[in-house]
Length: 272
Ligand code: CAA
Image (tube, rainbow, N blue to C red; front, side, top):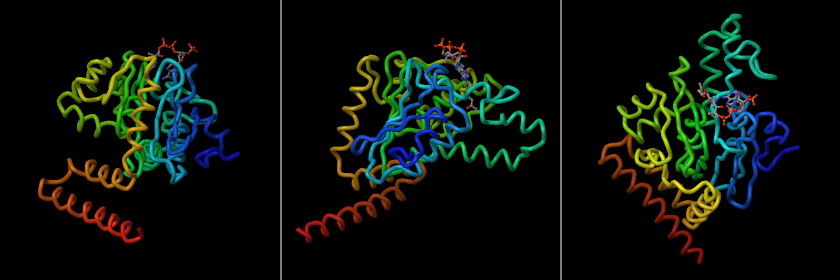
């Protein structure tokens, strides 16, 4: 049966996800609390599918974890012989010769799609993080526009400590937020960042007591929804593009965006 986002509920459940949509707010829950919401390739493919099939009426997407952790990152069984149930480990496929470099590139690009859509300008994405956000879990939080942390949150980019690199689109937002040197220090020591430090490093917009996390996210969603959608979309597009533009280019982009807004306002006024 298709769920609220057009994805079969059984498929989402098998991928360790749950989706609920209330009005203009969709909540994607990582739903394997007994494994601290460890994620697999199937989780990321399902996440990509949620993005592709999200109802046009949704304006806010909240990503949260069930249980005490946001996410313990990749399911470590993905690196062990046999992989996880229903999924062949990439390590096995490399070993048996069925995954060459081109195939690996395609598979990882597919996983990254689960993270990339969270930057879409027509929605605002919010990570609600309690407890651990490790590796892929930290990258998922970084892929969201805004992060609200419970005071027990612990962020860790663990990939280098496991002999890997962070490859789920988390390195760019990390560098954009904390700078290349701090990003290097965090990744190359794989140390854990507390909620208090995360706020100092601009990795969190808000840190609240654990019991207040859901209410704080609800309040933020309500404030975001109070701004007209088209203005929010155009503004997010401007802000997301700003780091890649010169001042002159950004000034041009602002003028174009404003002309679009004014034209829409004039058309609305003419309609009465
Ligand atoms: N993969 C598979 N199983 C996991 C898991 C993971 N990432 N994280 C936790 N689990 C399992 C545990 O093995 C344990 O299983 P059992 O009940 O069968 O013993 C269960 O979940 C509960 O875990 P803990 O008892 O360890 O729970 P805790 O609250 O004491 O600790 C934790 C939580 C700090 C997250 C700890 O479980 C942990 O360190 N997990 C591993 C984290 C990790 O190294 N993740 C990989 C990050 S790198 C990455 O994500 C790579 C990438 O994308 C390329």
